[in-house]
Amino acid sequence: MTGDEYQETAPERLKRIKVEIADAAKGAGRSASDVTLIAVSKTFDADAVEPVLAAGHRQFGENRVQEAERKWPGLRSKFPDVTLHLIGPLQSNKVKDAVALFDAIHTIDREKIARAVAAEVASQQRRLDLFVQVNTGEEAQKAGVFPREAKAFVDFCRNDLQLTIRGLMCIPPVEEEPSVHFAFLAKLAREAGLDALSMGMSGDFEAAIALGATHVRVGSAIFGHR
Ligand SMILES: *Cc1c(COP(=O)(O)O)cnc(C)c1O
Image (cartoon, rainbow, N blue to C red; front, side, top):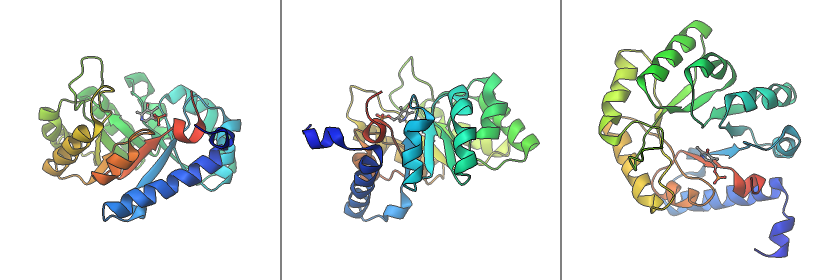
C-alpha cells in the first residue's frame, strides 16, 4: 500500500470501488446498475459514516441489530432515504426490532427465524427484501441452510409462510477459493427460481460480480480496517 492510499478518505475509497464495480460488471457483460453496493459500516460510528452519506451513498449494511439501533435513527433523520441491510445473524428476540429498522435482511437461515420474520412483516405491514443465507461450505460454525436444503427452504418460506424471498446470500469459507462458492450459490438460486445474489466482500467483490452478484457487501475497503 502506498502513502497516497493510506491518505484516502472513505468517500474517495467509495468512489474508486464504484469504478471497480462498474468495470467488473462491464467485463461480465452486465450493467453496473444491476449491482447494489452495500457499504458495510459495522463497528464504525455515525461520525465515520456521515461523510459517505454526504457523498450520496444510500445503501448500508450492519451486522448487529443493537448497534444499528444506536447508530441509524440519528443518521436517518438527516438522510431519510437510506436503505439499511442486515447482514449478520438474527436472533428470535431481535426480529421485531430488525423488521422495524431494516429494509433488507440477508440472513434468513432457519425455520424459526423465517416464521418470526413472516409474523412481524405481516403485523408491521413492512415490505423487506429477504435473502436466505446458504452455508455453501457446510462449515459447522457458520450460519445458513445447507445447499441441499436451499430450494426446499425457499419453497417453505414462499408457500407455507407467504414470505417473498428475493435471493440467496453466502459467506465463503476463508481458506477456499471464493469463486467456487459464488458459482455454486448462483446455481442454487437458479434452481430455486431466484435472481438476487448477495455475495462478494472487500477482497472478492469483482469475482462475485463476474458470477452474477446483485448485492456486494463491502466494508473495510471503504471504511478502513476494523
Ligand atoms: C463484515 C461483513 C462484510 C464486509 O466485509 P469486508 O471484508 O470488510 O468487506 C460482508 N458481509 C458480511 C456478512 C460481514 O459480516
